[in-house]
Image (cartoon, rainbow, N blue to C red; front, side, top):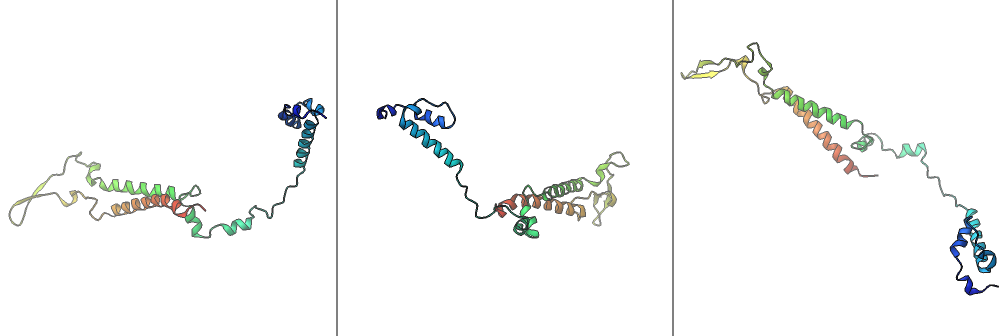
Length: 183
């Protein structure tokens, strides 16, 4: 039997490396403690390779029936998708409604006679009229009067409604994912 004191000076990491098919040190053959350590490490490696892998108590894969059962029904599926990457409807719809609303409001803000006239861009002549009280009042002819966007213009009302709908759709896209939460 070898000296116990000499085994304390042997390199145990070299013995462990020999289990991983490294270079086998000479101390394995000359020192019984090093040989026993090497044999124990080989037995542990063989036991781990042949260890029994426990079976799972159930299959964790979703079947098609499970996926259909877990999918939210009807309108809730559509509402859950708003504002997420699965949503392909509300962003283009919001952009379209907002664009139509802005362009309609811009069109109603432009005066009716500013697109050019037969007079070459000159101002319409002002005709003085006499008021019943006797004083002159300057007015424009009825067909030359400028129409403001506030004068019961259906295009202005429709444009404002489209702009509001587009803005509401953008707001819905921002708020919906936070309200629904992660499931």
